[in-house]
Length: 487
Image 1: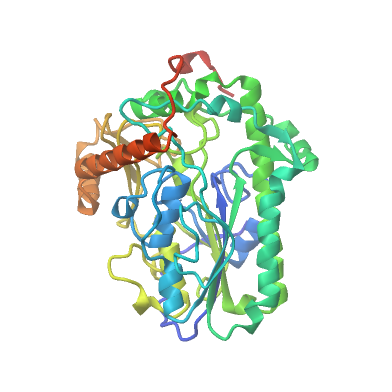
Image 2: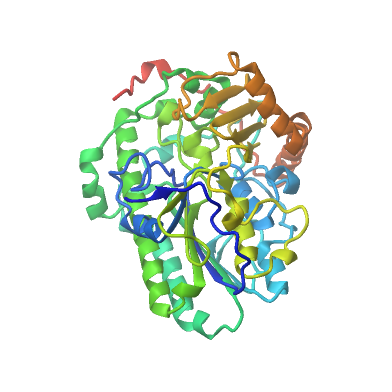
């Protein structure tokens, strides 16, 4: 593709006309696996088409690499520790104001379709319309950090791949609803609108249609870096491997899960294509920003790890492609950004930037320099599978993984994109600089304790409701040295 890198800010012009915003947010998409990423054998022609029409933000991060915290922070415009949505177990109703509420009060028509993963319906969060609300109905009870909880369901999930067309029904229905809304409702609106469509693929189970399964049969592959490398044996990674019992996964399962994931990504891309076509047919494409992104990534077996919950790049980094008014065609922005910046763009695009509450995170994407080595992006993780909180700071080529219960990791992503070489001991000045950036955002020790206190409240509530799981019957297996999954 002929995407270009530019030293210029996307747009310094004052916005004179309000635009609409249409977003498709997938679930668990590792940006490396697409026609825009490192592994381009995964077919995503519609994302490539979108990139030609707009801008690829090549260093985009989620607020936290797990569903409920990431989506809640995106909706609230605040960091996870600010709204205390620490994990996928939150037994209490959301009370924070959302962008849907603030924009609706300002005269913007706001719509949410599909998964929110909140313990509250979207109407209470203030959206003008909620179509097929996707709340989290069951909490994840395996949240204990001290001692480390073991999730017994993971070995079952390891077998969830293969052919099953029903696995795509949810996303097809949500996109059908979005297309119907674009045809029947959007053209009649007299005010600007923001519509976010939420899918659940390529999140596991990795079950696909027969044609997509066959498409990637030749890519029945294994991770390039498995559980034997140094980063895989960092205590943070070992805890996640123990929690999810991923060292029990067989080679056949790893191959099958990866094959199914590739098919899920291509299916997701097909839904992007359907939405783009419907937007074009509506006659509103010239007035509408279209964005594709995801709530977090997927380790996909790298370092012997699966799913999310990790602050390594494959889990914390997400795709983001944006096209429409204010976004030049065929451009790549390397400056680190995050989902808060996308949410700030809703206010910018609709002409309501002054209505955005003080203290909300993010900068509208059109106002971000294309290559700003000084810009800092932050992510955090407090949830299941770890013994304590951890934090991510990205600045320029450098990335800090700050761990409360383990040694810190420092990576130069320009030289080491796979995060194989920890430079914390050899670059103390850079480590200190990024630690300073972290402490300017939060007190990591204090926030770890606040998270632990809140987790204890959740555990007590689980016990009260009879939902607290028993201790594991057998100790976890963590033996990455026996896997040998190099290719």
